[in-house]
Amino acid sequence: MARNAALATAAVSALLGAQPLNPEIVVEGLGAVEAPARLELVRTSPPIVVDTAHNPQAARVTIDAITESYDFEPVIGVVAMMQDKNAEQVLEIFAEKMDQIVITKVSSSPRARSVDELAAIAETVWATHQVHRAATMAEALDLAVMLADTSTAQAGWSSRVR
Image 1 (tube, helix red, strand yellow):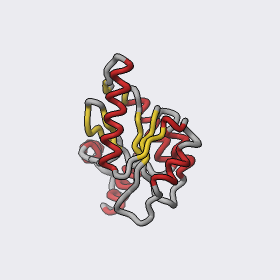
Image 2 (spheres, rainbow, N blue to C red):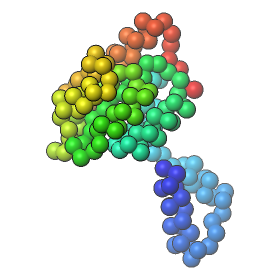
Image 3 (cartoon, rainbow, N blue to C red):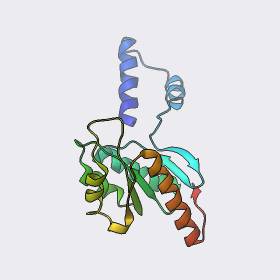
Image 4 (tube, rainbow, N blue to C red):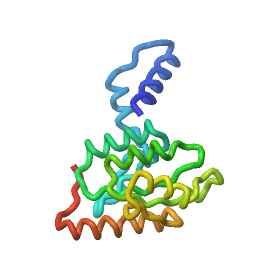
C-alpha cells in the first residue's frame, strides 16, 4: 500500500507539471484513504480482521501487520484462493500466526480452487485437526467465530485489540 501511495503522489505531481505538492495536503489525502478488506477489523468479539492477501508478499505483510497491530488468541484464518495463486507459500506464511484455518471457496469465480484441494494443501502445513472445511464464506465465518469462542472460553481469557 505504501508503494501505491507513493506512485499516486508521484502521478499527481507529474499531472501538475512536476510541481512539489503541499505536504499537508498529501498527508490529509492519504489519511482519508480507505482500503476495505485490507486488515479491516469488522468485528470485535471475537475479533475478525478481513484481509484479501492473495500472494506470498501480501501474506507476509498481513501476518506481520496482525502480529504488530493485534493481540488476540487464537488466530483462526478463513482462506479461499484462486487456482493460479501459490497456495503452498501463502499457507506456510499464514501458519506462522494462525492456530487453525477454515478453508472455503470463492463462489463468484470459475478460477476458484476447490475446498478439498485447498484443504489438502493446508493439511501439509497444519495438523489435520487444525484444518476445517466450509462450503461457503458465510459458513466459514460462522465456523471461525464458533472456533474462536470455544477456544477463548477454554483458555479462560478474553481477546483484545491493541
